[in-house]
Image: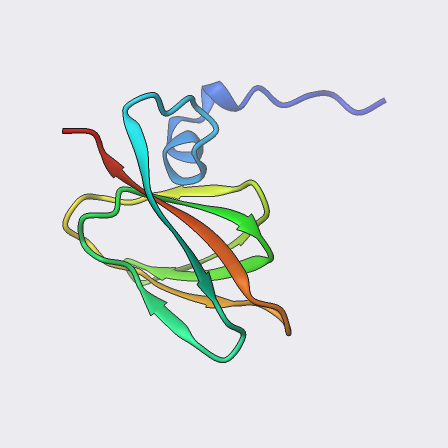
Length: 99
């Protein structure tokens, strides 16, 4: 039997992948990135969530691979580049901090 992992003990994981609840965020737009394109996130975006497909996110000299339902927290004022993984587009929800 496999033991469950309590991710709340790993605040960096929660920050990067958004396993903690995000009540202070609001969706501002949904974007579809085709398999042949790259999308540069605007600096006002605080979090990105994959709604469909798979995303390769280049952010602060690191690469992250996100799958449906996963999200990545971003530092305000920074940008990231997102491309689709595979031969399908990726659908993203972009979030900005509530004012």
